[in-house]
Amino acid sequence: MNSAFSEIEEFDFAELDLARYRTIEESNITLKSRCNGELSILYINIVSLPSNMDIFHNFLSNFETKPDLICLSETKITVKCNAEFHPYLENYTFYNIKSKTHFGGVGIFIRDELTVTKRDDLNRSELGLYETLWFDVSNVEQNTSKTTIGIVYRHPGQATIPHMTSYMETVINQLTREKANYFILGDYNINLLRTHEIHNISEFVNTL
Image 1 (tube, rainbow, N blue to C red):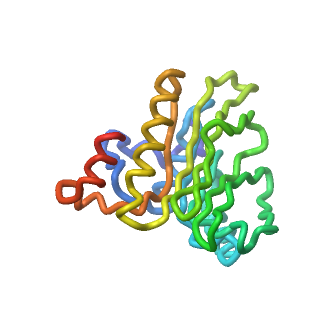
Image 2 (image 1 turned 180 degrees about the vertical axis):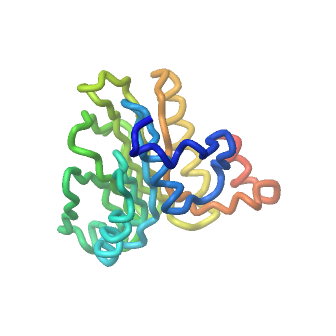
Image 3 (image 1 turned 90 degrees about the vertical axis):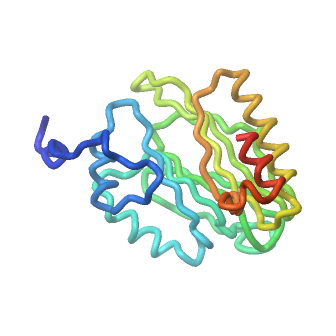
């Protein structure tokens, strides 16, 4: 184990609680410890990328090793505001799906050395309901298998949860048929603490 990994020796990955938030220090250990070919993914609800771009850059400066994929929800890059905003991050390419309202939107920064195929068959922007962005990602140089990445933002409102449930069921069935290795990240704006109280929420959870 080289010096870059020296601080990992006493870190017990078996003790990781995947459900809790990570500190910057823990995240740096995780990023440095990944094996060749493994994707590292960071997800952020950015609450307006144009407004928070400087904060975003400062946040990323804390990472000694940058993630391969940086997934963003609530970018507020929409057809009604910030439509011409084109964020720049060195060594990454930015892709996004605009919301059709003033709010929402999803985006992703993908490291340039990765091979990317946009999944237009799965991508959606439904007025006032949700935005989703999907990619197949692989690293040809390291001969890694394809991974499908989905970023989701659902606009708030209990009555519209079934629209998201139906869409997600269609997507998951498609990915299952493809035998895909996939990750879904995002903000569903659904209170899972009320799963046993509200039928629309329980149906969504059961679908996933």
